[in-house]
Image (tube, rainbow, N blue to C red):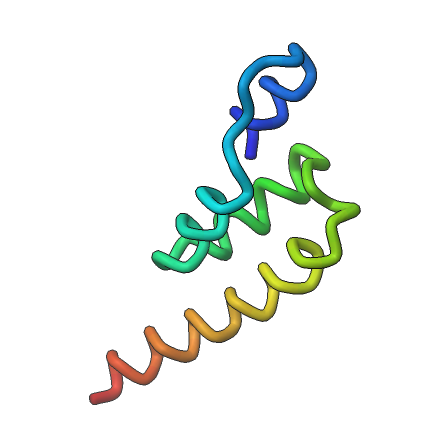
Length: 69
């Protein structure tokens, strides 16, 4: 999020939302959510605003399930 935010400010080539979502799906949702809040980036996009917290909870549930098995 920090890199994409800096690129946005400088009007440079950006990281695609698809790439951000792939990163989130590969167990990075919590980190992207924290980055989104810290750098105030993508906070107005409903898909990120609500999707990242939901995905974070799902990923946490998967990790807890795997650790209990």
